[in-house]
Length: 138
Image (cartoon, rainbow, N blue to C red; front, side, top):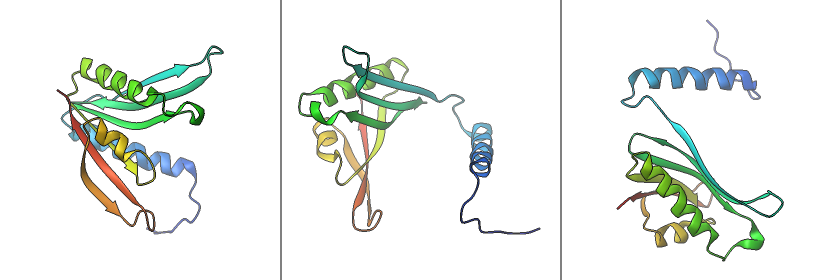
């Protein structure tokens, strides 16, 4: 046996390890499906100008991304995206959402939409913080 620290590991190793953990998790998890979900807004040229993405599993929507083109911020598009992805997740049987956001991102936006901070990771990555937030759907 040999243990090595790899300062620049190959992507194949990372992928292999991720697949092995996923394989173990699927054998032991109470759900057997995670499905991607997304909402997009496109312009007249079919270019994506805003969107949200995540995955659903069990009772949960895990929101990983919500983005609006900088020139269109403040026009309520983020709220519309959030509502649409939550509604789609509810149709899949989800009754709650989890997300994380950095201190310079959208914590006040999510609070306005009913999300509550469950945990704050301080000093992330050095002097900032990351908020882990949850919303129970009504």
